Image (cartoon, rainbow, N blue to C red; front, side):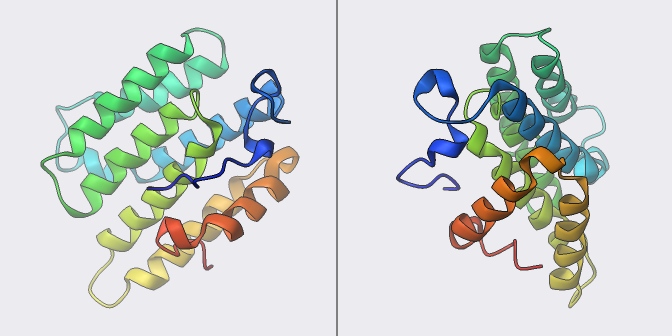
Length: 171
């Protein structure tokens, strides 16, 4: 579970009673897509014939551009997570990252899910004994990708939800 019991109004869109603008929601989706894409090769190395995680990332970006409705992006996210069901390790986490990126269209707070699963994928792909270091490298890379407009929001959210996100944001 990566979502808190009480939703942060900063991650809820204005039309749903929160303070998140559509522009910032889009930035979160694009950042989540970048996080997921950064580790996608870990899934594709195991299942090169399965397009579902890549399609989910593409749908996240298409939603931002207004090319697909939220429900289509969300469904693509579910399919990407379905691609992970019978896998373990880095490939599984990479597929989950892609799925989480696509469902940001539905709930902005899934952005941290994409990032957290990408870090878990990097950890799992690292040689024995190097997982924690690889996770910190991935976390720092993700932070470098953060758009300025949402940087403080995401960093604060990482501090708040780090424990329920497997403490992957200690970097």
